[in-house]
Length: 142
Image (cartoon, rainbow, N blue to C red; front, side, top):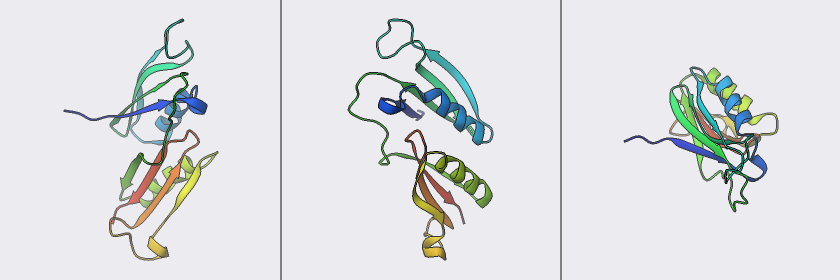
């Protein structure tokens, strides 16, 4: 059995899936776009410039994405996020800075618990939403 995170770009984010995937692959080490399939002319769910299905990997973890121009009643939510953890404070800080900038939103600043000590599960913790609406959590392991 395998589980894979699947991101669906709808509403205001529809049309931004390629940009998001290219951005993610550019900032994570050992990452690549594996495949992209676009909608065919007249195909339900999208138009030829939109991604029907794509796969990519971020540091060896596989992800899938699609986008749809249907009028969906949902989009991305902070209720589901991608957790990034590593012992390298520099790597976590760099990813946090890149994902939270240029239209992103800081939800929890990347810092030690109350500026001192740790959270009990790591030395530093942070949370942001990137400019595409995807939520990311960050953990510097102790």
